[in-house]
Amino acid sequence: MATDQSQENRFSAEEAVQTVDAPSTGLRTVKRPLPSQIWYVLRRWPIIPIIILLLVAVVAFSADWISPTDPAVQKLNFNLMAPTWGQPRPENDTAANKADFDMSTDEGLIGYMIASKKGFTRNEFILGSDGLGRDILSRIIHGARISLKVSGYALISGVIIGTAMGILGGYYGGWIDEILMRFVDIWNALPFLLIAIMVGATIGATETTVIIIIAMIAWPPFVRQIRADVLTIRSLDYISAARIMGASNLRLMMRHILPGTVSTVLVIATLRVGGLILTESTLSFLGVGIPDPIPTWGKMVDEGYQYLINGVWWSSFFPGLSIFLLVMAMNFFGDWLRDRLDPRLRQLD
Image (cartoon, rainbow, N blue to C red; front, side, top):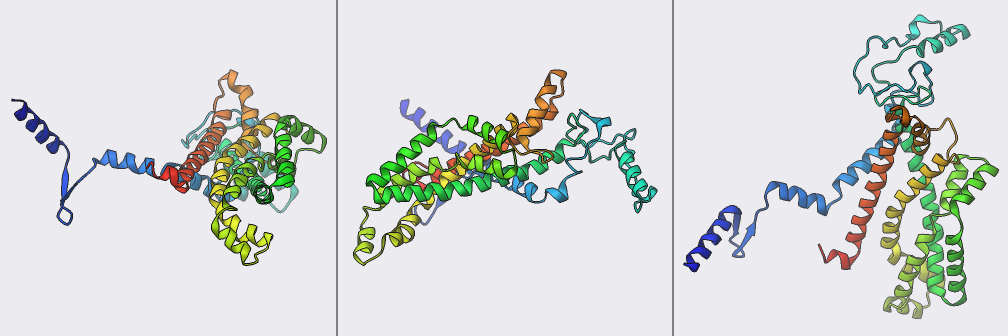
């Protein structure tokens, strides 16, 4: 009785799972259902984060061509307008036509500028407008360029400084390593936001100033991790062989040790980009970020949250959503890259 029941269960399980015989090996390969295959691919490869990152990169580099309008143009007649979602509004579709004005004279130019602010076309205000009547979608598109530019420059400087200090400390050790590590400890203890506010208020908030401020916190995470890798690499046999053959310290560090830290640098860099973007948004929110009229996502959130009490949610929601998607995509991609490049984590796949 028990035997018949176990055979029945086995046959029902075989019917539930489609199998394909492999005649060359005699093994049976289980064919996953389509939803299971899709879920497996999404877990194994960062498809969604890569799509988001590619989309943001394309938008940032082609902002001047795909932006519906100039992000700095103010149309006060349509301030705090709700999103149109691209739907036509004939009562407002009264955009000025240049053919109706003499653009060669000052009077014609002024007349055209006045008339152009009394209406808007279908591709404007798709995601609504802010308190000054500026197109939110256009500002988000141009803000992507600023976020990538500022975080990119700060990250490059952080990689160079942090990697150099980590290699020097790990290779030489002794008092050089002690001085560098204590300097990192002191640097991490500094109140960064307070320093950023003081610098921005004293020197003035410019694009270069913001990049320098963000670069100040970009390099410390690289130092300790790179130093730990160098402490392991410098004791390997091929380093000893290169030293015996007469390789100088500079050649050992640049030619033999630095390549061994590339995977670590890539992982830390991808994980740090999200934090740097949040830092730029925080500085813009506090008023010490990129100055007007350059749009940034953090500044858009700062300008829009004051209208939330009036039910104007779109002015801060869409730039905040952009920050969330970009940061999460970078974090997920960094986690995947760490799992791919770490042999110990790769064994768990």
